[in-house]
Length: 277
Image (cartoon, rainbow, N blue to C red; front, side):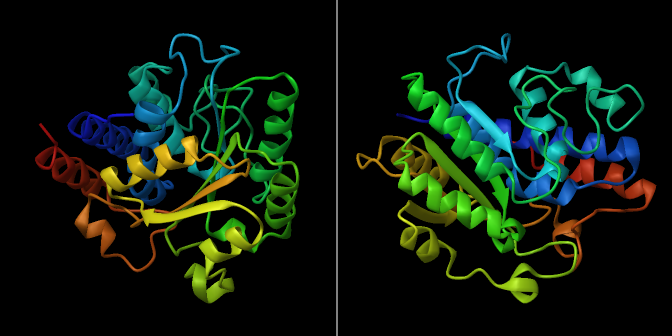
């Protein structure tokens, strides 16, 4: 499938811009993850997935599962960019009665397929959904976005083993590997390396790419979707926290971003200066 890379760059920028604007509403948030994974989300929503923005519950849609519930700000930004959620709603982010709570809840937000609570659950839910779609003879795909921290959860690997056993070639796992979690660097807290070889050992078709390189992501998504063998697929996406805002990228700890009030305006200004044509 051919890709319009300039258009994808604009969508990735839009996702970043929406996320920072939501962060400014609460003056805090998991903005670093949203900035880092924006390119992955742009390729997923504007190149790979089949869905209708005006009908997010369309039966024929590909499903996108956000296993990492605290990345909700990133998914909201993508859903706003896609047109599933009106842009005006970002001003309500994290407030009472908002459809955009700080941690993702499927019952609140159109386009959010699952509620992300305890980490390490998304891939198991994805296995169940993929099995269900197989039994319905559906050609839809399940895309499950998870974090590198979730690789330390035993449930993740139980799900990985089950997916291979059931030959779930309609399941694509996206791992956002930014090497940072609440307690420090992921590789120092509990190293999961070599991640790609571990997924391969579990029977998955696996690729590892620069998660901030749109062209590499497009090729990886296309290969995953069209791989001929009846096996589940994984794409390990190495990303940079706070990508696109250099003064935030330089911070050693960016798992949960808190900045001075004027720095939100600075981040938006930096993004504006780098807006693609």
